Length: 376
Picture 1 (cartoon, rainbow, N blue to C red):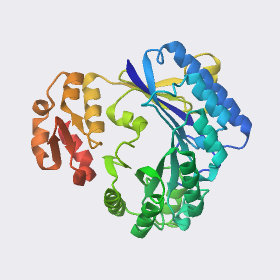
Picture 2: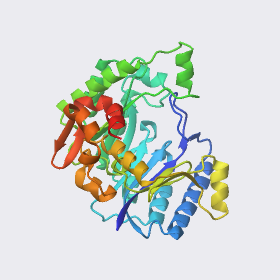
Picture 3: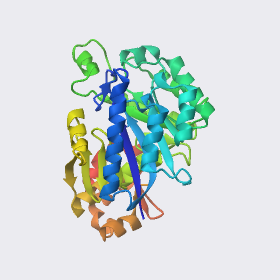
Picture 4: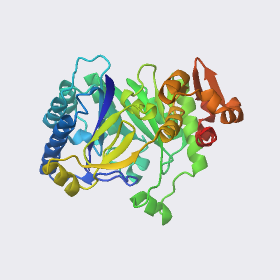
């Protein structure tokens, strides 16, 4: 039976960060969450009727946002029970993203009892000046306290580190890594700041009110962070993700291996049988469709074999495992080495070819895009 990842989008925050362009809304009333969860339950029911769940085994669930840790434990339990999560599955990973400002011991313990076993904490920085500049609600002390609370519950802990932020230095990066690794953190996601249209931070930068790192400076910060994490025993298993062996994010890995996943909630994206689609992105449209008894899906693309192959190559090469030649042949009925000989010859010094796998050497991941272009 095929495996299926489930992503549940919770599009509410207590306030909007200066860099954020995600589909999210500031929560002003608990009734907003109540209505939203009611419609999440409706959507799961319609997905069950469609046969997507019955034909596949759910092995990962991920609550993303927004700020999913705004969910009351009763809401979380209701969603998980509706999905009929099999908590006894040894391979199961159930993650919730959390803002440090929303974490307390009782809530996390209730989440764990409901079925959560992994938490991704949006720390971003441990420089208070930086955190204030980007509109985060927590300070460095509160972020560390949130990690300590998660540690006490026994949840598997991941933290986010953002690079290229205002006032950020290499010393900040080292301090961040040293401090979080005093605790039981097994996974760190690193993201380079992207200035998106319509965000407060981009407007501030354009008005010269605040300065952020240049692209070259961001790469330098990233390389420095990667070096420190490698020294600490973390494996760069994907371009932006580092983990101790055995603690790689199973759900997020589905995105890079093109395994199937279904997105639930406002604007959530899915990949099922080479079809990419997403849910409608306004509350009014999302609620209307569900109230009328049909799924709020918008088809993004139906990939033909050539498009699926290109996507497979592009995503697989983001990982340290790279392209498995046997898997490639099984999926596309051709030999990768023969069909991509020109690109392989061009980049032979930048590639590892070991144990029936082709991957990009870690020191060349910064030129990933060019290598992919030449291969496809």
